[in-house]
Length: 325
Image 1 (spheres, rainbow, N blue to C red):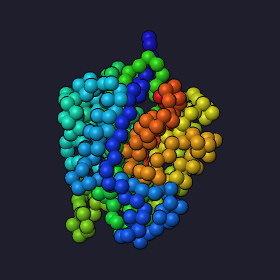
Image 2 (cartoon, rainbow, N blue to C red):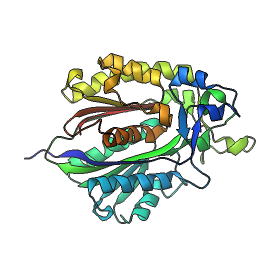
Image 3 (cartoon, helix red, strand yellow):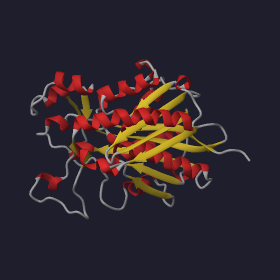
Image 4 (cartoon, one colour):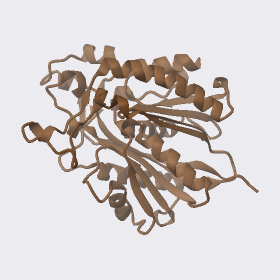
């Protein structure tokens, strides 16, 4: 019996037009370009316009991925969308995007795994294809995180941006995704979280009802570096590969120092690492697919190359995918 793989046949991305540089932030936040760059590697971020939603960015990224794949929206039989900033509580943003694309009738749902959301969604989609239940799947990672920042909190507001990325997965007899590894540990939730919601209630005595990102940066950094080290080893073992066989590392774009630490653990030079954190900042679930689309469209990533995708986010969640592009 022929083994079924899921293979990426198209990528796409979307960014808001507005660009907010570190110099712009200096005008209304107690910070500096030098302070931000030295600690994060970030130089600018994109910020959604008033009325511009996660669904808007997702739809545009999806349309570009479908065009690149040469696939019609009507051919898609599953949509999985990773986000922690949905347009509305329900229906899911995936359902809203489905309707806009004209892919009505297929299964569509959101995955909330914070910054690991896209890789989680990719892992889910891969299983649907391998099981034979789906043939063509649209996987999206998208966020409008700037709606969740408080600009007076200088240590966190400088970190985040908005954007979306998407891929089209297709069933194939040729190797595509070799392995995905998904993990979580809710015991760390208070190090990176938003402690309000429908069930626990909102905070009427706080701006925006308390809906904003709360993060203990140093503690997150420590756990992320250690956890990603172990994740890299696990993923290589699951795919029966050696680090030397990797052509590219495409990591979550949260912090340049974390990216550099992961590359060092793999023994990979930074020339083999896709870095977009300087241009996009941390776009959470949008981060990895944005970086992937940039790498593909810039000509860096080529067909037949082995890519390691990895992410770490609130939850904590962490996830990886090793694939041949």
